[in-house]
Image 1 (cartoon, rainbow, N blue to C red):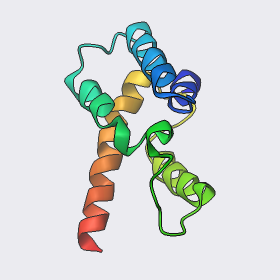
Image 2 (cartoon, rainbow, N blue to C red):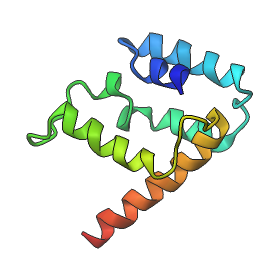
Image 3 (spheres, rainbow, N blue to C red):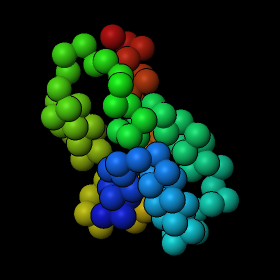
Length: 102
C-alpha cells in the first residue's frame, strides 16, 4: 500500500507512469487485464490527472475521507497489492450501485 500510495501521489504524469510500471513489475501484475484497465482509466482517479477537474465545492479532504471510508470496508493494513486490486473492483462496483440508486 505504501508503494501504491506513493505512485498515485506522483507530481507528474511521467512520474506516475514510471512508478506504476515499476509497481506492477514488482508485484507481477502486468498481465492482469483488470489492472491494465485501471491504468487506462487513471485519468478518472489519479490526482495528477485531475488537477483541473471541478468538484462542485467538494474539498480534497472530503474526497479523500470519502474514498478512505470506502476502502476501510475492504482493505486492511495486511492487504497485499494483489488483494487490493481485486478488492478495488468491488469498491467501484459498490459505488456505481449507490450512484444508480441515488
